[in-house]
Length: 95
Image (tube, rainbow, N blue to C red; front, side, top):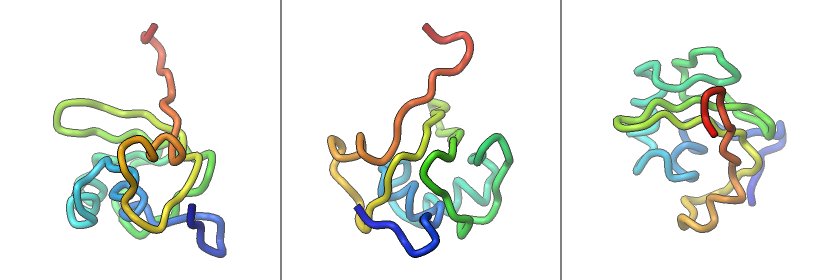
């Protein structure tokens, strides 16, 4: 798994590589459209760095995902490999 010198990765790259968006362009549109929160703060800059331990709330067309960043990659990974990039966060009201 890849990680840059500062201990993080651009948000748009991470979203694409973790398979929340099909392309970086789609990932950028998600972020710039206000559909992503980083540690509860609305983010509109796709170049913002995410670090291990950060919590992302991602509003997708048919779902809302809340995940904790646990790793990084230097490429788009296969669906089974995404388990190394994040953990789902259980929110209140879920069983």
